[in-house]
Length: 280
Image 1 (tube, rainbow, N blue to C red):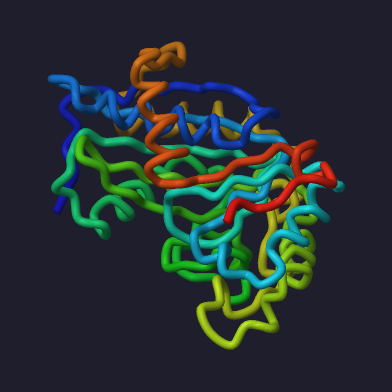
Image 2 (tube, helix red, strand yellow):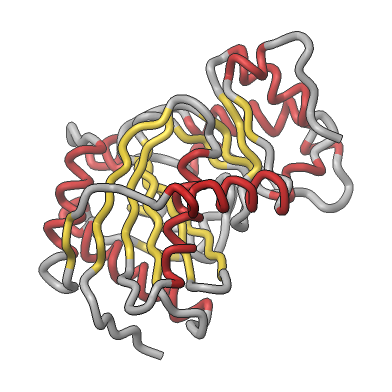
């Protein structure tokens, strides 16, 4: 099934976040809710969070999750339980997050992943041939990992709503020891103690890298943003617009994620507080 765009992508960059790690997800959700409008246009939303652990639902079963989050809070990491699939992903100022939103609820999972893979392959081509497929041993490993030279630089997770389809992905642009962070996180959280329902089977930090580290080039998040838009615009219609969401949709999305889906989010300062505990 091919995807035909009847309107240009609205290219929206909401910048850098350092407070509640749930906020960029609320904005993604509000943008998705805006797809209910007649003749809604597709959206590409870009953002950066410095720094937090974006947990998957499966991570909630880790036996020592609270201990691990406390420890990472002292290292400057916040955390959030996200609504899309997968396991824990570490974000920092060198990771570019991108959400692709289409006003179509009939897309198959494979068709949507295939379409966004095309966008990435075109948008990142100046850094090398992007490979798609699970990178065994990486954090949040899955069929739609993407890599350079067999080393993972990002992954994708998809979700369907009543109004459209959203695919969220992250791209490791600048170099940081993210693989080491995740080895430490899962060790402290008790991954090896689990006999079943493991969020990931195991982790080898060396399977994860970044565009800058793997190419040996001085590449920044700003560089990748510019390159993505320039390359994608040569193949698909794209219009850069200021980021905005209606206040009522922002409030509705906040309530949906925090109350109906029971997602939690904490800053590093909150995790470092001796009185902090995970919600029961």
